Image (cartoon, rainbow, N blue to C red; front, top):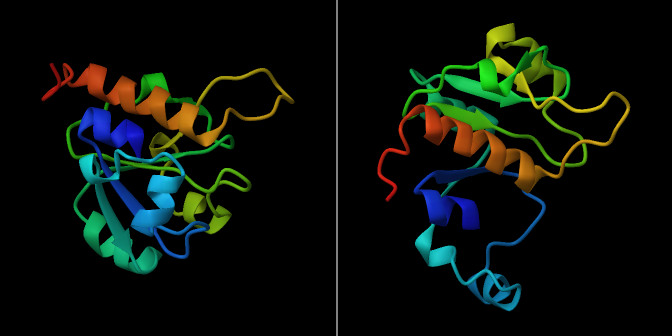
Length: 136
């Protein structure tokens, strides 16, 4: 959420989610940037896909062959990340072309980077490719 507040990216959350977006709880957790971020909630993945139609979707997964740095990102592309504990479902990944499944290079047999680090790396690559449009 903080990354979105700092970059102007929109955060789409697809239910069910494993946390509560209650304002009081967010403030208690030190997330005082909630009102600076655009957060859009989708009831389920089907609802999200209705929103996403006609947009390019890139899924981040350790199972991909293509490095994120080889993708060509355009404004309004969607970067899809799964839960940190298990990643995106295989059924979703199987529905995407290999060119739309991206990975971060890492040592073999090492644990994945945490979700926030992975998102930051890929978001900033996308912004870089688009000349940091809208950022000062």
